[in-house]
Image (cartoon, rainbow, N blue to C red):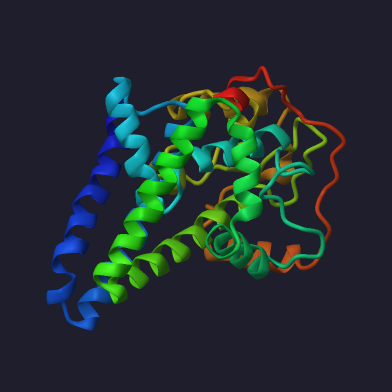
Length: 289
């Protein structure tokens, strides 16, 4: 049982019922404050969702299944669909073949908006990809269940209280823009063709303490199934072995305004890095989980 991660997820279990129950009684200022708080809770819960996809934060099968569904609902991602999408990312490391790769000539704002809107506005391409990746009957049933949980909850709320349903959708979109930003920043100036340049490593104490060592992204891409507690020591080993490029190390967090400005300016319309083959195989645990 990963108690720190479960504690962060418990914050959403406090926020979501409050959102459902208090919405009608709150003035517009109170509703806005509730949504801002919800965005922060969602953003933090994404760190938990990411960990849970790689190393489940709850071991009992039933509890793990429930946590998977509720974490997906917290972030607006059907859990199994997003996990298949994420493991594709680990297979191709933001290179060609990665479904979430930035397109050549695509600016940062366009990438973020497109990535957040695609599953909601034009989902067929994404659905086709994750459906094919699911392969087994169990995975496909799980995929259907997760879409029913997330989209069903949103549809029910839109029918019950349209304004509140739109507010939840807006919250999910804003949160998902932030989530896609993390992926963009973590692969800023990286090169999927080289094992020592798969991701950017952030040594920000604040970011790694509160976001479960998410800054140690190079180590995470080399050892996707390593628990978050081991990523700091894994990074130290990589650095000692010269397997982290100095240019891909920073003391800033990806949410630091200075890093945001630098990435937005530097990316501009530069083409994406090329890649000729996957850097991990289908036998790697993350690719088959």
